[in-house]
Image 1: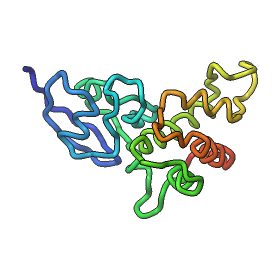
Image 2 (image 1 turned 135 degrees about the vertical axis):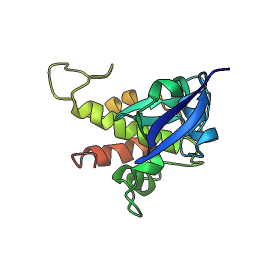
Image 3 (image 1 turned 120 degrees about the horizontal axis):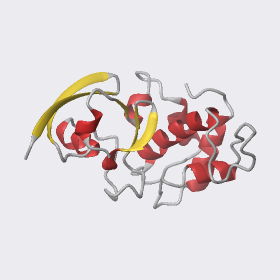
Length: 173
């Protein structure tokens, strides 16, 4: 077993932790740092419950080795809020009842925030009709871009409505 000390900024706070070189970012966050917003679902990168924003991009934290992210910046769904003020995406999920059991919600929210930034940067998806035009976030486009995040409760219609609302408001923050 080879342990390494790394420092990652988690939700705006630099955190130092010693981890085995085989420890995933998800396990380092949850088990070593007590950051419980990202959830362990499938632990194989198939469900999206562990999605966080890593250096500004959405990523599946169960597929990243913590040692590879030394010096990185992690934002979880809990870190999106500004003190007592919810992030617009968090509020939209509440307003549109985009959650049921809530297990997938932190990953859904981080993925939605990251997805909106990708769309604004012009990154196409498999559903993008015209690769030469600006991305238009239709419901089909949103569903395609969020397809890596599963909800066992089936709150998809409300999740899409929440994302559509925030997408229509301009910038993510």
